[in-house]
Length: 389
Image (cartoon, rainbow, N blue to C red; front, side):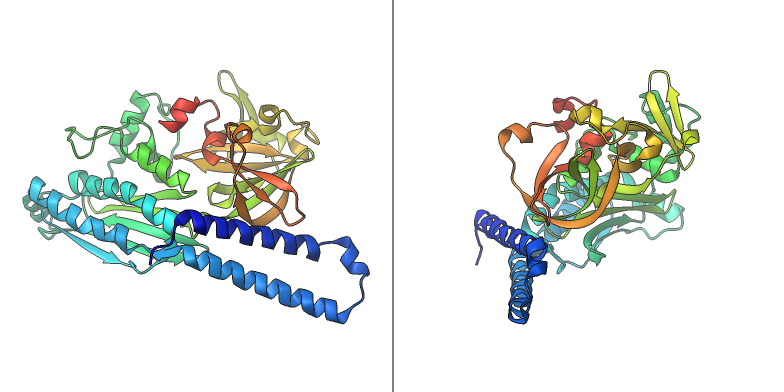
């Protein structure tokens, strides 16, 4: 029996309100003055029931990823026949459950990734035999739990990514500077740049340079991220990290002045207190911070949001490194409050139009906190049209 998604969303909203009400009661200063064992027991039972209700409400939204995976079987059959290639698709973890909204939205990114693997990754049978490989190529599609996330993995035993060609194309387009030290992962992540295609022949399947950037944006809309590993001549592995549910988010709560904001933890790579020797001002690029041997642009968020910070001196605050679309930016904040699992709330139209805001949540003390958009933080100069392209 299929349940209306809007009804499930309404149920989660009500459960979220209940969780917030519980937090307000538990954290109330007045409660500490009440000496009642019966009240303590009743409150403990209320917390247990609320937690169970939240778990059950979340489980109703969860469905197996099987429907999205099964679509790939026919896609592989059609493409291999069309391209005269031999490819076996190996699927595991199709019983893995995640939010039904994610299952509905993940199909398009997976279709493009499978197409890309067959079109540009897997070699023709005769070429594979010459390289000492089986004539039939393999693509592994799997899903599994890792920590509090779901990982979807697309792996092939084909050509692998050509690091030098990707880098040359990126330099040609001005995405990076010649001689700039980049790790393999940073180079491979350049394929997510809009319009970047290294295919020798543009086909109607892939290689038009309008695919992987769209895949990246679609994954980020689901509050996920992609990691790439590749070995030339041996194949590539794309790992998609997704939240279990779209109704709840793990966030890093930060303070800027008197305001608190939430940054999705999946987009945060690290945080630290910068020293004076790490900060550089470069003509045409502004303030930069050296992070692990690389210069990262600095965003003073209080300037963008029109907020008065506790201090504008970097040594008095902290820097949070946020990643999106293969790039990273240092975000200056006053302090870290901690990590928290929060229930996402809908926004009014006025707040929703802010380019840095992706949503809102109510913290345990009842205060509203805005959820920041990692893509807008890392690419603050992109126009709304570019960000939505």
